[in-house]
Image (tube, rainbow, N blue to C red; front, side, top):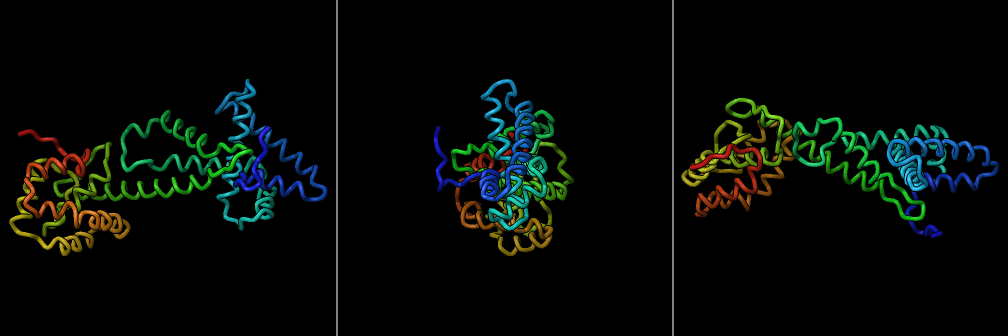
Amino acid sequence: MKLASMTARQPHLLRALHTLALRPGHTEVADGLLQDLAGMTVLVAGKFTNDRTADGLLEASYLTLGCVSLGISLAEIHHDKESELSFLLHHGAEQVFQMGFRHIRELAGLPCQAMTSDFDKDPYIQQRNIKSLFSELCRADPNESWHGDEIFMKDRAIRLENKNMIDCAKWLRKNHFSGPVIEADLDASAVISIAVMFSILPDSYIVARTGQKEIENLIRRARKTIPDFQANWTAFLNRVPLEYQRILQTRMDEYKNTLIRKILSKTSIKTLVTEIQSYHAGLEQDVEYD
């Protein structure tokens, strides 16, 4: 049997059990905890692995260990061994497991990319995503270092940013100059790119969806008038809710010395339109043919 490294990052539950073992008269409390954990392991095996095989029960024990550890790690407490043990004993292993699983479920509800479709609302797909995240983040082998909580926090930050982009794109669609764009499929990054591109002109309207001819006209007008795009961007941002301005400003900073320079340069319009359609307009364009 492989021995766990003493320098490895142990799952929080395992660390709490080690701390409990050092307390005098811990036997009765430890027995209660272990019985609760055994019961949860059987339930996890029945739902996520296999409760009829030794391998299935072993895998379920790893998932139970990690899910309880996630609940402890993300709790709003002072994170030292005694505080984490006290938290576990106060709430009980089953409730802390539910806390950890609730975090997984909430994470699965956040978009993993800055796009949406009707496909995302399928209950089967939603359950599959929860199961996938549960298996990925909560599997904690006691003989190996565990980083499920750290991965959770990084993934959550990415997904929250995706959600912010989607919310921003929905607002832009709602305020599209020719009327709201109503469509289930949404490419948020493309909506933001289109809006930023068209806002280099001094026009007062918001463009959230475009086509080939509109892109060509944008390039021709920009090259003819040489707009003060920084001033026009500032005016555009002032019309947008504060919570979306950072996202738009980031895209403006990205485009300032790249795409906008090309729009104002002598690059062939055909070449530039192809680049915009391929790399910036994404799914938010009406495909047109000459």
